[in-house]
Image (cartoon, rainbow, N blue to C red; front, side, top):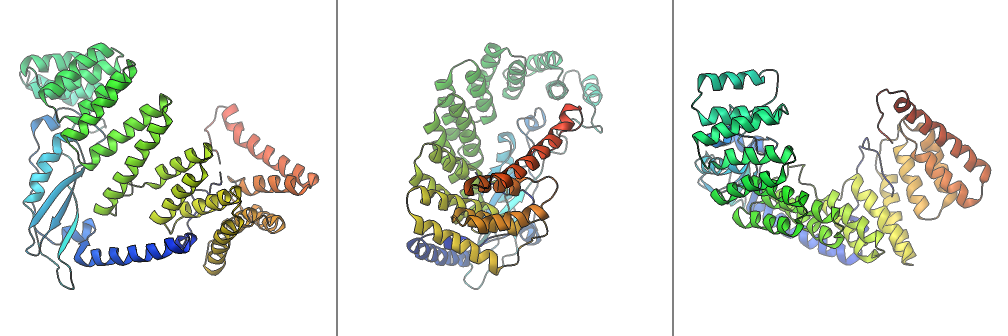
Length: 468
């Protein structure tokens, strides 16, 4: 599979790679999308905040400061604002379930200066409320002794004991964490957050039965505590109870079905199905995750984490491996449709051309390659590191114009950075194809020396370089 390096900075206008009917359909869709943008304008976070007349901070519950439920990136809330500057819709996109409700309620109280006119009926955007000020962390400014001091000052505080237990988890002192959570539970019986802390501690200790008992109690007391559902599903998986784990995850979507929960659930289910060899079910979960990513990007175009291209590539790879080429082509086309100006679209288009060739559709393959070539030749593309030359070589290679491909790969090899060997690998394959054993041997030696140099730091115990 052809892979461009991450340093690639050029872009490709590749939506022309579809067939004529798809181009017409795309045009109609673009017109509909344009009309939608006229009626509903999506603002960046900076633009949205500049219009805020009244801001309200969330009042997070104590439980939000007692434990860490997931990586802490704040709470992101999507808001839609009417012509009076009032919030008419607010829903969470990312964040802890212990904090989302408070953030949503705060967002509903915000007021904005509207910017309507020219057909704009409403505006929308995303507010990042950040984290509670006193959240538990592992850093030099909050050493573990600060949480131990908190307990010494407030020995009867369940919150203090729970926070210390969480700090012990962060410092991998799991037995001490159990002790503190048990003390907290004696002061606040059946508290979901304390039971959750105990559950994940026992999980990390490898005591799965004990972990499951505590996590089940969490869900019984607080059914919408989805992080406990995630944790219990992993415990059940490790206990070999895959069916029970997958059924439990579906429950998370029922009790709190926001896009963040769906994305997490489908990610966990994909991992479980993949590891258990249920490939078809795993692909279905990728398809669901693609839908969620597209929905998130429609709400927050700046959310780079919601990128379905990676999953679409996996889907295409799966179908190609199964020789289900038509389905693979459709997946590659979806990459082009979603991100038409990108290196990912270039790779997907090349892969489509290759599959068309396998299916005997030479004209379709050539048409894709010619459009790519026309774009590369007519647009300024950085070539100081041989990127444009390598692209041309890859296109010519797919068109079976081997001598042209060799010419441009040689140019790319002369300009390539020190940590790239791809042009030489392509040259080696091409020289073998055209029967030039002497030149193939030269390229093989260049490649051998490169990888020997790459592997040397590992043999010598030095830092490992990134494999090209």
